[in-house]
Image (cartoon, rainbow, N blue to C red; front, top):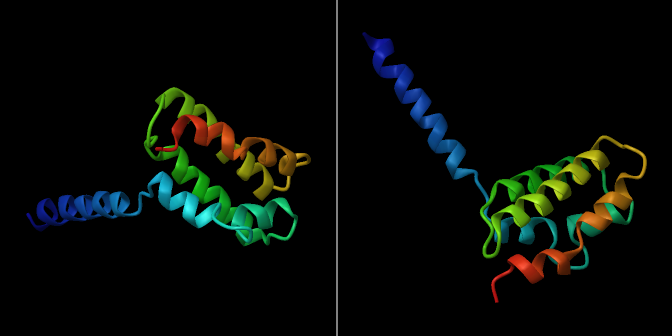
Length: 117
């Protein structure tokens, strides 16, 4: 009888906690891309640590899960999944990954379509 109450409660708590950790596109941009000393710039310059690479990949995963602030959701999905994939390749130390990340992180290409005016 107790399990019938506890298990659904624990599952509901897990769902609520997962929702609480979702980040908006704006949150990800602030955490990963804001400023000259941003996490992205650090990684692109070859100065990022393994933890920086993993953190950037996690942030871009969150970006890919976020809703686009504006514009076509399919375009958003294409751009953000490419960005996340490139960040994961950097974290996995794959050859040419930094160049892929640089290409995928073209701010203007995404901002012109998805950043609110």
